[in-house]
Length: 290
Image 1 (cartoon, helix red, strand yellow):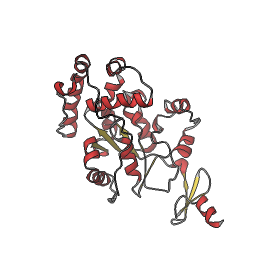
Image 2 (tube, rainbow, N blue to C red):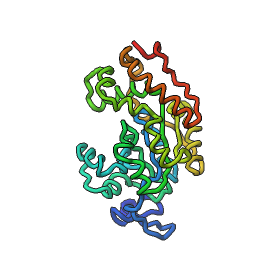
Image 3 (cartoon, helix red, strand yellow):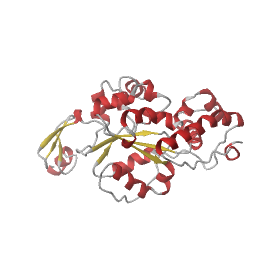
Image 4 (cartoon, one colour):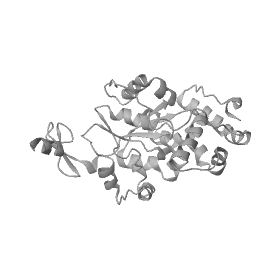
């Protein structure tokens, strides 16, 4: 009976849950007010670039707690967007504090970094439309950001299979590209990052490459922990999450390819210049067009 009670009230060995809002840290003999805990580590995106996998890897580090149970709460878009979004998903959230305490901090035990992975922050042109950088700096100051990028053409193909699987999308790949500019806009990485660079500076943004997350995750995670000024952590393994694309993938038509390749190449040059990169993306027409 005592063991059952102990497990009920303890979040961890040293953290006791008093109620929904307050925890007690036995080791430091202090109360933790969950309403004052704000995300200070933000995976900005990009969607379909491995954010779910990275979210889970980061959550294994003892000094990092990633938003649980909701990975992408859109905390810094609340009232403007995420409140209505979650209500349409059947998650009735009335206040920002309710979103934080009941849907983001399950299992939190006072870790120095509290992270979230809202790819909404760099979808379409929302960073400008909802003034997300301004909301972040006004509420938390300067957090740490991680932004994952992959070949933009690969990303668009992956998005197509994602919305087919999870959104019941019935139209063609070409229709997706021609009917909604948000998919292309989200792949314009320099434009999506610019507002964050302007407000927070490049030094607070870690640019991550999807291929590194897939091919050398141990090395990449060490780089990220160094960026966060944390001790390294030896992961036991790296499971891939949220992989939706089949081996035989759809290709672009000549019309759709020509419509998007100009902006993508322009953004590539700007991103390389801004972050001193040499991106080896394959953008050759013969490899992507039917």
